[in-house]
Image (cartoon, rainbow, N blue to C red; front, side):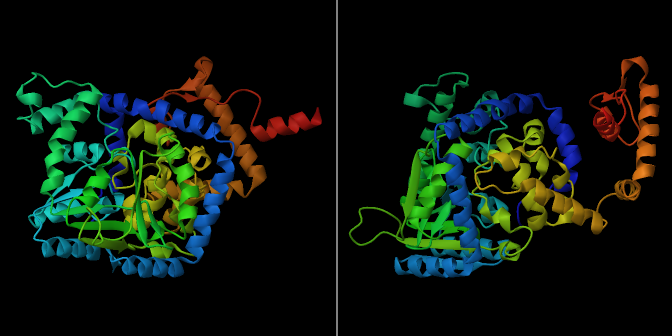
Length: 480
């Protein structure tokens, strides 16, 4: 029971997203401010590119020796009083968390933002067993009220407009009255909405029997877990309840705190354009006898879910991902259709590259094709993950395994046969260009074109211009 998968319906999802005016309005924030802030923040740090290179080296070294660093992390965390649970599958991880919650007779748990808990479908599973999870990250709280999955790795509710959020609060907070006075219709001002959510959630922190967070990093040298947030909700979630459960995945391990400090300098700049996130919290086991507060128990649930199979292969570079969301913020496809169109937990370019491994290529076959291959995702990725290369790998796999539609395979095979015969290829392109120009006539554009209806349904197709193919023009230029 991992998160619900609708990736096979990507084309239908995308079509619905393109027709959604509220989504168009909400996604405008991605195309402009978030991507722009990254550029400004990076330009203010002269050594930014050098830091990216160093961060890549750190992750590559860690992945090459992951078994050593995971064992070192477990030993250090255990020495500090934490309990480490190794889970190969989402089911094992869910069952582990459930058993821990039951050991505290938990009825309510607070949660910090965690993509891994989304990956394993934890919320729905806990609810089925009469345990109420309460998301405390503002974006996660909003989509929990809306019964929707996140649409972005760092901004789960970026697809929602302020008006939509105000409507949700009106529906779910009927008794909310600051200072005991009803204020009439809900305001759509961001600060007012934030204050309302904060007031409603405040008591939940104290009522929770267990607090669940994710982890941005696991530090091997001292057994610490780290979370990076802008709201402080993660700190309350892990420090107020008597039990703190960290649900994370094995590739989050980093050798030392110094290594983490290097990666942190590129993380926030890539994600939100900040120099550093507001809160960077290091947790080192449960509270000690002389500590004033903190959880009595700390448990760390480490999920594999196919990640160890990625080591040493075509997909290993994906394990460098630090979940910053920069690839989404700069992707023209994601900016057009939003995150829900991708149909699973990880959207955007990183999802198109990672999801086929986690949920199967048959279920995610459309995602690697949901890319213009402009290369912007690789350009902005702080860990320099070659996302277009990996998406191309999945396209090749889908073709070789005959997962793609027959017409698409036949077209590619026909093109490949022709491309291996240069003289025939040049003749065919000359004939094709001449025919397209003739059909387009004086307008120079075609409103419909066989086998290209995906393009012409939304826009005209430009006819080839006079002057011949690129090869013909290149040869002509050489003769001159």
